[in-house]
Length: 506
Image 1 (cartoon, rainbow, N blue to C red):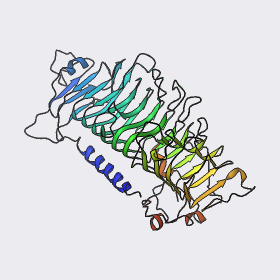
Image 2 (image 1 turned 90 degrees about the horizontal axis):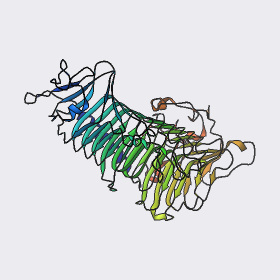
Image 3 (image 1 turned 90 degrees about the vertical axis):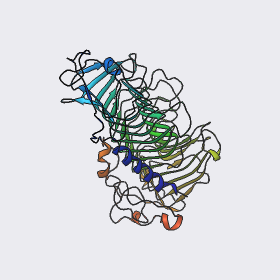
Image 4 (image 1 turned 180 degrees about the vertical axis):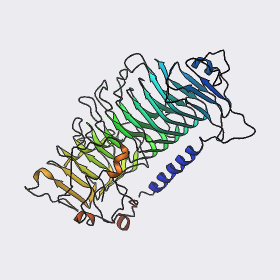
């Protein structure tokens, strides 16, 4: 039933290794790359060498770059304008490099426009730069770094801020690696993958890792759809997002309705989101959704695993299907944690399930296992009252902890086996007798008030670790033996998974 999981993960890892290896130049006696230097004290009439540098972006936009050439901006100085890289055709051995020289990073200030636009180009590496726009409400109407109709691009160690649309935007491109990006104070999103072509093959083989997307409040010009996202990928196939952090996004989306999410996907296939942290993201007052992580309309053969969501105003983990999307099916959520999510949006829960199409053939085959959902003020799972038609939803070996009720809405034909249910506010009161599960205090050593601020610390986050001698370590269902589901080799903390363990970390 989940044959696609090992294939998806292996595919993304191979894609990552391949993409990353493409960006290292190798000397070749037949190629003589040239480095062009741009300095605050330069002159566009000079030769562009380090001792005789150019001065402006306009001058280097007129260069015809050859394989292996470099454009190097003087660190610690600001350069005004937009850098256009059009029809740059480098190769795997001799990529084009865009970076800084000297101590620190150079700044490209683009005012109301994009800072860097890459179009119909291949084998380009961009690193160690700050890209700054005039501000999402101060005249900028563009993306910071745009990668369009291009392939084999590596963007790393960049800071991007002040753009009304996305800090970094990818469209109609493939074999793109995005690493160590700090994208903040932008409008639509910190990082986005999408395009006008609605095919899932529009973008392919995308790797996003070790990025921080913070305080991207919303696009003031977008009054008809969501904005203020952390990382959002769409119209894509083969995407791996890992070790990324999203926080404080979406607080100024200028509309009610579908809200922004920390890290999510829609109209996408074979997406893996893992080892990521999404916390304290916002949504608009009265917003219908928003949240920490989301597989939205049209997502297929994808997985969210080893992630932590806490104190998001929308649900921690969203399972949504909007009307008009392609069918949503064959997805997995496993070994994730939600803490006190969903306090502002309609969700009021750690998990929110909604199907705007009202057709169960549009939302089906979801496996949700070995997750820990903790909610001290509301419920664990919320099904939309009139819009949650679905089939083939399976919940195995999860811990669901809520304040009073644990589920709101109708569970329908969903299968719940081997889960632990705990109403902590009623622990001394009447007992819940769930079907095919346990009702026992998971005895976590510390719950609530999480202050983790970086995905790099997830491996050591053990607040929801099952105690050594707990019954929860061996009273769950053996997923492989009974359902031929391979739970993988590691839990939330990258430790060993007991065959019958309940919860996310042991």
